[in-house]
Image: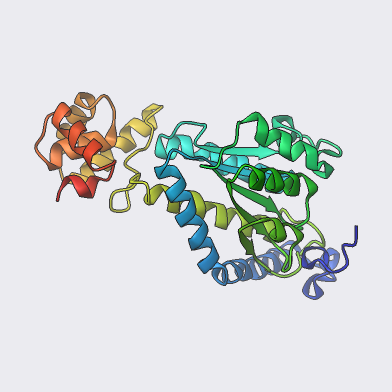
Length: 296
C-alpha cells in the first residue's frame, strides 16, 4: 500500500519541531491547525447537503442510515449513531454504526479486520440491508478494504451510498454515488488521523444525522422536541423545552408532560393547539410528525 500520496500521511511543515515546543506552543499550533478543518468542510457543503436530502428521503420511506468504518472512523460512526437515540427518540435500528472487528473494536484494535472486504459485506448482510437504506462509508485514508467491501455489497442490493474521506481522489469515492472528500492538510502529529481528520469526520457526521432529523420533523424551531427523557436531568430539560416552545409556565409544562406520557412533542402540540392527548396525537400523525404543520 503506497501511502506517500495521501495528505493524511504527509508531514506537516509547520510542526516539524513539535518535540521541542512548550505545552503552550503545542496547544497554539494544534488550535491553529484545527481552525483549518471547518474551512475544508465548507468546501464540501453541496455534496453534504445532497447526502442529507438522500437520508431524509430514505427515512420517510422507512429506510435506515448505516455508517461503517474502521478504527477512529468506525468509532465516530458508532458514536453518532448512538447519540441519535436519546437526542431524537429514534429506534436504535434507524441509525446504526458498524465498525470493523465488531463492538470490541470500540476500545481495542482488532488486527486485520479493516483489511477484509468480505467482512464489510457480511456485516451489512447481517443487518439485512435493503434498497431503502443509505450506507455511509467512513475512512480517513479513503482506501479501507472493509469499507469498500461494504459499499460494493450496498450497491449490489440497490442501497444509496456515500463516503467521507480526508484525501482527495480517494479510492472509496469510486464506490459511492455521493463521495465527500475533505482535505484539511497534514496532521500536527504525522499520520495521526484521530486529530484533524477525525474532527472533520465528526463535523460531517453531526451535519448528516442532525440535518436528516430536522428534515424528518424531529425539531421545532431550534428545540429537540423528540428528546428521550430517560433520566431526571432529561425530564427537566423536556419541561424546559415545552416552556420554550409554548411560553407556558413550569407548572403547565409539568402537567402536560405527564398527560402526554412524557412525550415532549405531543405535550407541545397539546398546548399550542389547545387539544387533548388524543386530538393532538391525531394532528401529529396527519402532519407526519412536524409540529409546524399542526398549527397551519
